[in-house]
Image: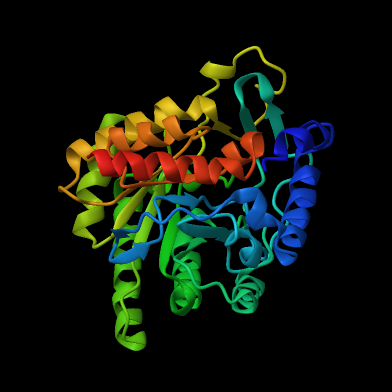
Length: 344
């Protein structure tokens, strides 16, 4: 039974970040007493191999909802085929000053400038260990805000070393708009140094742990064709196993004139669907056949999820859609993609 439409007006009456915190607490409680299974429905079995991993279905949770990996026990009852948590940084940091999340309900969108607020990698890994989560788990890593951009690789290497034994796959997030200069790592010599450095570290860790953990790169929807060309050539060359397209956008074209539209930060939700799908399609045309693309951005319905697969994605992730649609969105999208796969 979908009760979220009744709860949403109450949640939308308070600050978005506070509503998020309250909602995560309620999800924990609902899962603990078995109620979340009733709300979310039976998990959809639609297994698919991606990056050498067996995903239970084609719908995952995007990073950002559970930055500290503190709610995995509850989230695994919502029917996701895989879950990604973070972004985590080497040291704890508060992120940007509040308020830093803003709703644009007229466009089913959010703007956030959270800034990688998290409790640091030690607390992150302790939470994951306590969760006993057994599904495919992506761990999303970033750099601390006070680490100079020319030393960013040091932070990413440290996080990769720490999370490696606990991850099904690791996502390298160089596309958040809320950490100064971070997006410059998506191109040129900075990109090549980042990919090469992390590939070398991963090879050392694979020998040490006798297990090769896949790595994915998360990119922005605001890339031009030349930047997409560079990424499509660099990712396979450096042994990255997937690309996650896309993060939030800096564009305000789709929300111009609305309250909060001029707030600084990344825009997510329905307006990102088309820009994200453009990047997915461009990547699919340039990447080797079968190279995994995890499509994220603007999935508010089963039809939106299908549009990502049509554009060239292998699987999808959702986040802002949960704010507007609630847990029922997970099953709706998983069913839609299972049916699409059967027709293919």
